[in-house]
Length: 209
Ligand SMILES: CC(C)(COP(=O)(O)OP(=O)(O)OC[C@H]1O[C@@H](n2cnc3c(N)ncnc32)[C@H](O)[C@@H]1OP(=O)(O)O)[C@@H](O)C(=O)NCCC(=O)NCCS
View: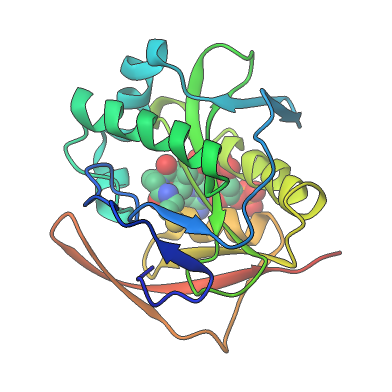
């Protein structure tokens, strides 16, 4: 996302992010207030809290997250504090949702995000996700994506929902396929440089049943 992004205007004091997230931008179509929880499919999605800092590190400080996302690697307490603050601010201005993924409302086992599509497409919502290594392979990512896709259409009034996935990220492509997304052949590939890796990311778009 850049300051030329037609769906956003840059805040004058936009800071260089220390949290792997794009600069803070005020969206033209802010999301509505973020609910305390979004539930479904055995999950309770809720905002991160200060008490979750160790759990956030457990979810995000691992080689796969460093390899395939923009989240800083290694990911330590300062990164977690920055991400928590960014989530709180993003919720306030309707710029993004950053939820801890839990099964019981308490213990985070992953993270799921929703934000305005980086392509600048009006009313497009992009999702992101990570699952703690010990909790992978149990459908947590795909269930989180299903719940947030429904939330994007029903509450965020999205016209479409997308995932932007780096080529070679087979786990994430598995999530996309499992949740009804198909490769958007018309979308330009996106070059991503993060954590010393060069990626070519492609857009997957949700096909409504
Ligand atoms: C991608 C990630 C979130 C998947 O989490 P997960 O909870 O293990 O995924 P799920 O259990 O929901 O799996 C969903 C589908 O993907 C498939 N899948 C999961 N991991 C896979 C892998 N390593 N290789 C191939 N397929 C895989 C599953 O088999 C499942 O398909 P199915 O329903 O047809 O059986 C997790 O590996 C992760 O955190 N990776 C690092 C961060 C990342 O890459 N985030 C996405 C950035 S775009």
